Amino acid sequence: MIEKATSNANIAAMLQTLKAHQSQAAGVGINAPFDTAPEKTNFSELVRQAVGQTNAAQVDAQYTAHAFERGEGVPLTDVVLKMQKASLSFEATLQVRNKVLKAYEEVLNMPV
Image 1 (tube, rainbow, N blue to C red):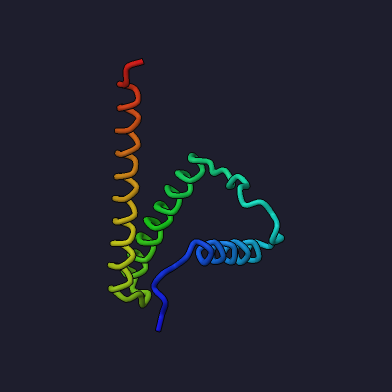
Image 2: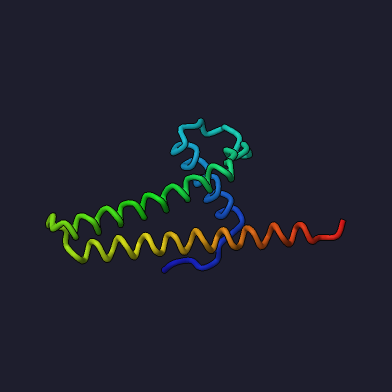
């Protein structure tokens, strides 16, 4: 039968075990500090990558559609699927842009 009561000692032991596994997976010694700062990310670089991926999806969909039109043996399902993926990617990028612009406008309208 499984014991339902969990003591503080059991929880502490589980946390210590998880930290040890985490440090082993990261390639760090067991006694290394866990409060190291996470790697900084550049927002503009993330936006640039997202726009690049959206553009790549659009170009791939267009290329596939042209290949289908030329009769190169591309199935119609591939064309439709890639066009839908490109459309969804564009819509998502557009929604993110709109949210960022709205947040920027709200910051500008804040009283000082």
